[in-house]
Image (tube, rainbow, N blue to C red; front, top):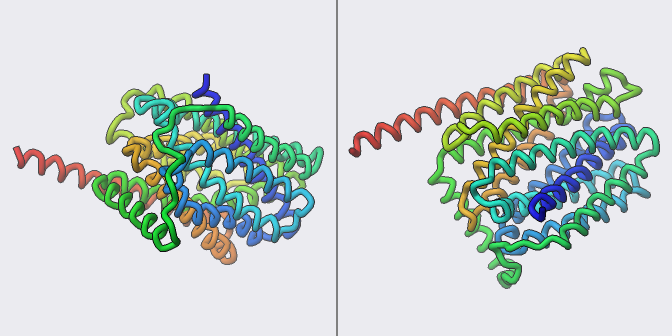
Length: 406
């Protein structure tokens, strides 16, 4: 029961995160009417994640991951409440940066602690449940934010949003489990020593990944996938406005809601695929990335609502598959370095998003939104196919080397 409650706490935090994601974006876009301001809001959150990624993995390996999650939830709740009387775009952008920073600390600590609580042999099953709960939180958070904002205003939405974070923190305070890392580790004295320590930790991650070329290839795809992700995150609210400007919030939430339903179905299916082991995890992850990008390209190039919803649904399936398989592969790394591995993964994701939110608005100044999506997601498809070819060559050469040895 304790283990399941731990996952439901994460889902509660996700619910709050998705609510503030949509409501802050809508408030900024409504106030400015500018895709550039919208992109800046999304980018600010991402840049916060980039900065935190440099330290979140180190902290997750050295300090109590449970306490990091508790304080992250409290900080997010207080920050959201402070936005209610100050909904100006500039203040929202600053808050989005801080939220992105705090989200990184919470996520890395949470992901790193999963194998300790649930066991190494249940990683895929646990990650599927996490992805399922995350998708449910996404559906509820996005649609709920749209409906509540329409009926009661953004103040009510932000109040409910903040309460989910604070409730999550309260539940985590009641939960106890045996953690392999200790919160008693002292910080190295002096800034110089801290920098040396961080540099050493990052070097250790580099050496670890260097011995696992398949993991390196997966992270390359993950980086490009985050870069491409900026196109559909920016494109969906613009698509919703083009469908019906007076009901933008409704379609914005509903498109993501249908996407989330597809994700939920994927999380039920993945644990039943018993053949998903070893190198097949990589193959399935790469195939999911290609199909995910294809789906985004198709529905963001349409204005027919039924085509949009249909392909948003299928895109959600493969997006959830790629995310779940990526987490599963990373969690198979050794526990002593797992926090830093996830920290690097979060860094890649945040950096890719940040770079994408710089490039995507520039492309929108010269191209239509569907063309922007074609370019960024097309890059992901080409990169993934290239990585698959390189991976196949690596496996073949490794097999030949083993045969020659014997």
